[in-house]
Image 1 (cartoon, one colour):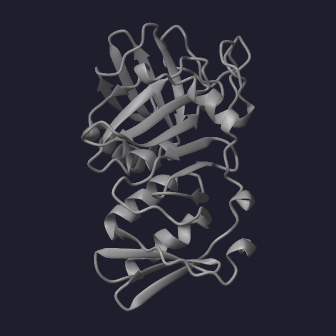
Image 2 (cartoon, helix red, strand yellow):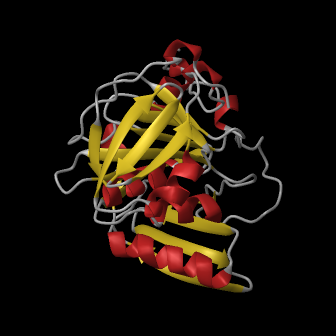
Length: 285
């Protein structure tokens, strides 16, 4: 990790105050295959996993003061040490090349990096192309208890895949292998005009669904051959708190509505890496 020369010796007076539980949830939501992020403003971030299979976007926390400058940080050491602090209120400040998190008589110091040195930065043109696949009017909300049940099923079975089978009458989420052992959830709130099925990586879905908390989850399906699925968490007022784009597993399509099988499709499979995806015909980069 590289210390930003531009901050050498600098101590910023601005202190960002945030509740410990709120900060922990925010950072855990970012830590979904994305090991580091660039934080700016009210802890706003956009990051893509190094292997290009997960992208996370958040506008930050609406009730905190903005950071005085943008910084790159590794998420794991912050998440793993927040419980070392005492009290419910955390102060964030920047000192030289460190992010300092303080509460009472205890402090955590985490090295920062230059934003351009972060390996998870997202190209704005690529982000625009990907988001164009998930129009605002195609997001569908579903019950938060469903997300918690899916997490329990993934953990209980040790599942590596989740199948989403969708059609005009609703959806079915199948955790595990339906030919061996699985848990199925009917979701009447999530529909599609054309029946099809997709494979979603269980680990990424578990990471997202485990952090639903009191938020309202929603899903956006890009179609059998769209290559991605969108998930987002919304506040009680409908404000988008965090958005995820997840690459589907290989050989995922199934336009006939049957549960997809792990066999080569008749047509070329969609990309499994967000960076490899071409823009839709009507989108200009």
